[in-house]
Length: 120
Image (cartoon, rainbow, N blue to C red; front, side):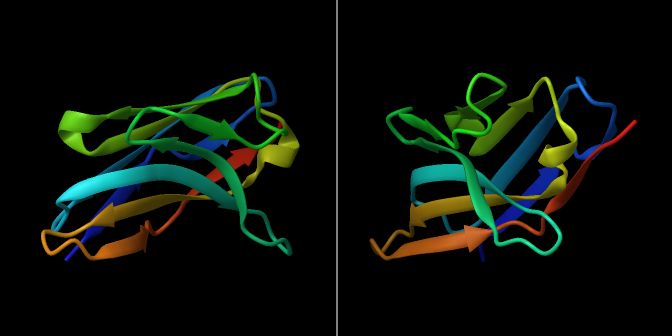
């Protein structure tokens, strides 16, 4: 049973920083990519950033230069450093895992979400 545990959300003032973490465990043979998505009230879930097993990264235009995604392969953990936060970054942030089990079956898992609120 794959499990994703997220942490690091909270309330921060505009211009502040946060660091989100997501640790994956259970039934994972190979990780192909991990990433972060977010969903603001009344809006669709959108991509924030992804990182592949080869450390190729992709960012939404709205966060380029402010957010940084990284991973610890040994710990199956992905991080998202959020700097220069803006009120429009307020959302629930979800961790995503794209991986394979030991039988080679690909699967896609989501974390429970962590709230990020940017407000003065």
